Image 1: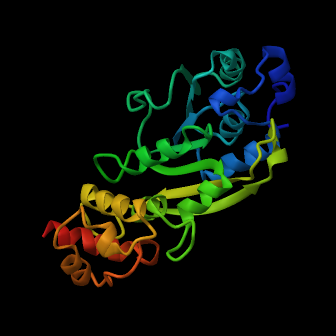
Image 2: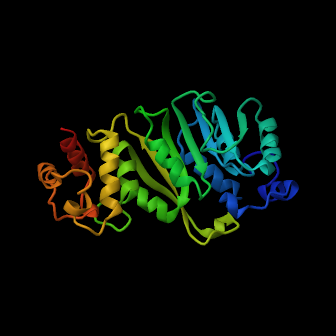
Image 3: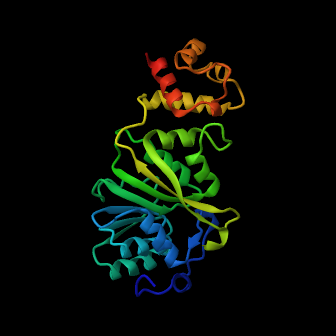
Length: 277
């Protein structure tokens, strides 16, 4: 055991916290595993940590046992609050709990940057939260790293290379401003209830500056248009972006007959710069 609190199965029974599909809940009950995920987030001793969707608090306990300076846990499900309050009593002044929707809570008043984000994200909001964290108005962001659990298929989309089926907007967005890698694979039976798919933990380290210069808005517009019609050649898929798109593609060193999944991050950034010039 990582602490003297009750095992998670007991916590769930005591507080009647059966996982709800509507909330995208799949609980990780093995405390050795949650401690391992906390360690994958790196040294936490001088750092605040944001956790989304702690549920009964397995990862929360891992983060606190790994000496996180302070954890801010945002939990939408009020049934989980008594279990989290019990953890807060065990670790005085180190766990703050907000009962709310992670998509609506402004965390900046509660955390000292640079903070880390570690979460077994609810499946239904995971991608949306990641995109928000990767697209703040100012870079570098307030967070230094993200250690996040996703469905394995989403994890593969974040780390995909050009030419692969999984390669798309999410890979470009993640790899432009961070260093993402899959650090842990988890089978369905690690969770309760077991989901139909495998999961994976992705660690994303924020880069001090984007890998290649480009205006974020332009890059996002180009990438979205290119992958919305990924089967089309880029000269057709990007027609709506500029009437002179063939010239811009050639200026960026991209063949107009190529498809989006064949084009790397550096070339997309060059295309964004050409369009802005």
